[in-house]
Structure formats: structure tokens, C-alpha cells
Length: 251
Figure (cartoon, one colour):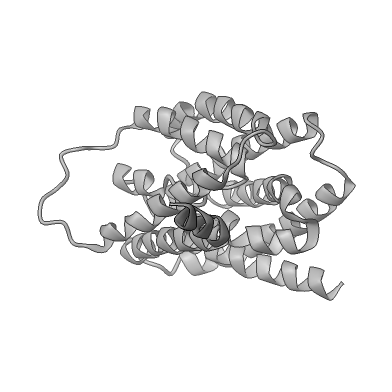
């Protein structure tokens, strides 16, 4: 019982931080969820809880959602998440988690001040193929953290629009994933119990996160987003340190 209470308290803090950093609760939540349900049930539990937290964010940031971006993300998110969930039990995700971790860590370069503006401009239609890839990876390994936040920032939307649009797409992503997991037999009573418990805690945390966000400048938000991506990448690599060690020893 004490373990469950500590997990819920940890989840409350994590979901407040997820508002301030543009998302990324999944990577911090993974080890906590694994403590109470085991590694194999992590993906479906997080899918339920993060889907509920995303619903709460959409409620609070509804007026800021960029529906043009959402329209481009809509079909690719469904297709990618179904394929990823279908391969969930068949493919080893260790290499993918290491690659994603390295990509997230590499965003530390965004802290450097650019002397020249980038010639490449992120456009709305670019989110379709990116969304397909991210949805596939999310369905396969349970969560990819704030992997697309760099694209949202480069597109130039506000912090509220980032949270609202990302969360609207996340509802679609996690709803598709949980249906897929249930169809494939990965959702049972324990998964539902912990998913709903953490989900309720997350929805409460989002409210407090929104209050803090309203006092934060766009520049500070951008820096926190980039920092959270780097930290998420480090955590993902740390969680796979044994596998990385095996690769190094075998080389």
C-alpha cells in the first residue's frame, strides 16, 4: 500500500512537470509504474493514465489548439499507433529506446545561440510523417517522451498551443493504443486499476501545472522544454544501461 501511495505522489509531481516542460511524463513515469505492475504492463498502464492527463490538458487549453496541425496528425497517428501496438510483443525495443535517447540528448544543441536563422522551416504537413513515426514508436515501446517538441517549437506556436495541440493528438494516440492493447489481450483488471488511479492523479496535477504555466514566459518555457528533452534522453539511456553495457562488451 505504501508503495502505491509513493507511486501516486511521484506521478502527481511528474504530471505537474509535464505541463511546464511540454510533455514527457511517460519517460519519468515508466520506472514508477514498473514498480507496481511489472515491466510488461507498463505500456498499457501508461497509455490509460497519460490518455486521461491529455484529456485534462485539452480541457484547459482548448482555445489554444492548432486544429490545422491536428488535422495533419490525425490519420498518421492512428495508423502508426496501431502498427506499433501490433508489434509490441514481437519486436525487441531496446535498440529503439537507445536511439530515441540519443536523439533526445542531442537537442542540447538548441541551447546554443544560432548566429544564422535556419533555412529549413517546419510546415504543417511535415507533422504527418513525423506523427506517423512517433505514434509507431509510442505504440511499440509505450512512450517516447517529448520527441516532437523540437518540431512544435520550430513551427513557432505558443506554449499553450503546444500543450493543447500535443494533448489533442495524444488523446487520439492513446485511445487507439489502448483499443489495440485490449484487442491483443494486454489489458486486465490490474492494468485498468493502476491506469485509472494514476490517471485521476494526473488530471488533478494538470490543474496546478496550468496555474504555474500562466506565470511563465515563452522563453523560459522553451528552455525548460529543451532541458526536459535532454533529461528524458538521459533517463531513457540510463534505463537501458545493462543493454548498452552488453553491446559495448560484445563489440
